[in-house]
Amino acid sequence: MDYETLLTVQGYAKFFLILVVFVLFYSYAYSMYKRDKTGERDYEKYSNLVHDDSSVSSPLEERKNDKDIDNKEK
Image (tube, rainbow, N blue to C red; front, side, top):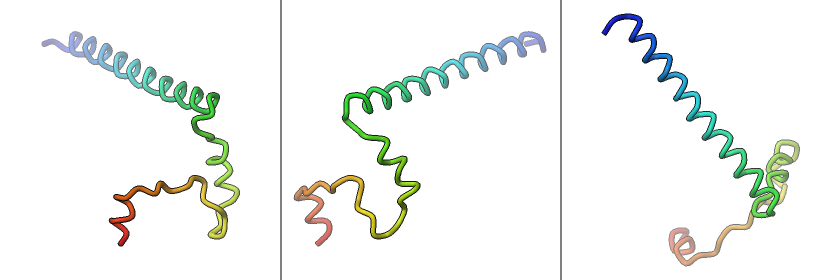
């Protein structure tokens, strides 16, 4: 394989890698946007955690009370 072919393959590989990263990033950002708009998750309370970071502040989410969790803690 000569040098020019190697550079061409490297260029195509970089392009497709950047394309995959771009698609993954924007699909994740869209899913976060959709969850925030439907009310499934409130990301604003997580951003407020930076300003309210004390040991006496209330938890952001309640813990699940499953039998498995209770058995593991005892």
